[in-house]
Image (cartoon, rainbow, N blue to C red):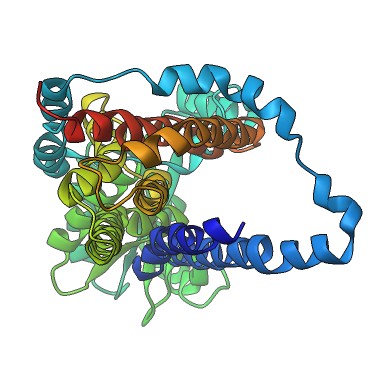
Length: 410
């Protein structure tokens, strides 16, 4: 265990960096996730290498917790798989993932909706479908006017709002007042409108001197559409004469920051983990430093390219996954560094000793991630799938691409 103490400290450090980069995200929900993930990774190292050995010393019977005789059988299949060699030219060709992933980043798109928290078969989503089929709308937002007395200007704005693609119906205080007073004589109409300004109902319709609220019924819940409506409202009322409000609008504002969060956290993780790997390799006087870093970063970049190819929308889950994978990606590279000798032209000694273990750990991690498939909310299932794909791409880069890049030319 002493031999693993130092390399495992640095593998935990890269994991802390991966989670910790999320602390600088724009969204509070992602910041909290990153903070507790980083604390958990640090605690894991402390428990495993400080507390666990002390427990084994205090309770000698527990020292035989592993079955060394079963290990060769268990690792035999993994050992055969890791002996497979990727040709040098193939490894170099696969490095095209880096420029392709970087070029694809501007084409990544945001898409999210509150209803996607639940499966399509969920009663809540089926109810939304029924509402849309029978009434033509799916949800509602409010258009708030700063001054109820600007009736003619507000009516003109509402006529423009009715032409927005997402809006199917509008309920506003002026139309309601017209409806209630339509068949009244002019004196009664004037009297009734005066009552509306004094009655409790006026607090909803918009009494004199207060704001007025129009209800917009919309046929979509996607944050992209809602944010587009918000931009339209800003153009419609450049001096804050009106604005969109409601929980759906707040959700859209939150989702708008996701892409910036992805770029910030992913970029920060890539730089910090690469610096840790470079510093360690340089301090240990190892060769092939850049192939080591490239192979370690290959998995997260390949996943980013998959997002682009399969048009996976960016939302808070994809933003978290990319940064987490960068933190995990440096783990194998650090172990190979410490278990390889200075005289080696490549990392064969470390790879031969640890690649089968790395593959088994990856399989175990993938199995652990499968628990997300049993989650109640749909994004958790997506999180599990993305993590599984990501960690297998990472181990492919860590082992086979590294072997291909560092093998001697034939």
